[in-house]
Length: 375
Image (cartoon, rainbow, N blue to C red):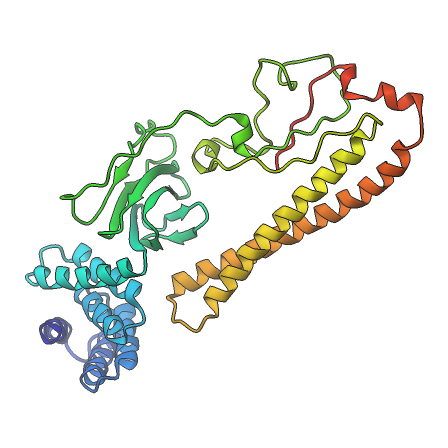
């Protein structure tokens, strides 16, 4: 199979135009010939670089097969090999060696399955669109991720087009693929796409996603902090039947990207001595420390995975670097907020310990809806 692919490639490149008529074509031919010699000599890293150079100069579907073969021979880039084989079949769906390529895909899927993950590929129109998965980063399409089995929300966006979001189920058995065609801005909105499982084979569809009732406000991890009221009682006050105001910064994609989580731990209720704001500031400090620790661990994990010595594709390395950098930033913000709130708690502890008639008039019970702050 590898010989047939290389011969077919050489024939297509050698037969296109005269040798002196296209310097770019001549350079691509030289890379392909160098790649063939390196592959025969079992210098697979060199062959890979030469095939990739030829692909940049004169793209050809069969080059993806040769690139995938080099990745497979290196035995350290299983995701990249699988991506290359799948791209070959997408660009050349009618190829006569389809069955052999599909066997290679099955081999790569088995290796990923042994690691407890499987590959999800996202294709989209127009070209230049960006795909993202919460917690997994954003990549230009065609984009691939290696994910544990489960259901993920895939969001595809492009300038001048309406953003599309849909759930996609990844199973352990087969690699998955989702194709999205974005609607230009100003066109009628397409009907929402139902939950989709897009495994390579539809013979064994995964079980349907079980629908659940909307989580309660406490399940969203929102911390409600009462601030001195400046208006008469209104809907949204704790204890009332009206719903709380939506969290600040909520966008039209909030219902898609917000993942339900357990409520954040709250500090004990303030004692009867009247140190309400001391406890509020202390609670914010605890939340800030927790957020800083969580994001710090996430940044450390991404950095360790990036520097563990394994080979990564450019897309994977970019995603890991972005994840480590953003998590470190959020960790610093969390620690800074915790420090500020802790200092405020000390000051408030001293101030509220002094009896004052003004403090009684500033109590939340005076009326008005509390301000809802989301962390």
